Length: 182
Image (cartoon, rainbow, N blue to C red):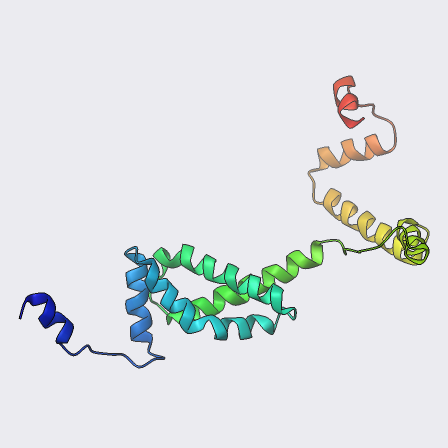
């Protein structure tokens, strides 16, 4: 028997399915450039991670996107995995942080409306959305005003003074700056 045949017939020491030792062996292979080892980790944990993310992100297609993003982040960070904790613990934290970041980003995006402007009822809704005198428009204007004021308060005194002077009309923009704003 050749050395290859002997190697194939030798019993393989197997780790239990949930074993951290097998995860550690796989992550070490990933760190050495074996992409297929990470595929095995994805297969092993994809359902757990998706279930975890669905606690935060209710829409299943969005949750799948967030899970994919979490696995991509884990793959990119694999070289820095030190093994101080179990691989799943490390992946769990990446997934939680990715889900939370997704929620923060989603809250910053304006609401998207699919309105048919040819439909008279929906055209009226569109007009209402554009009207700043509605309670929603006034609330949004107030939120924007508060955010701008908060940002201005965080600026150095010199910049705050310049912005207040420009807002009061006491300072005129240089001609080249004025040309850029039109």
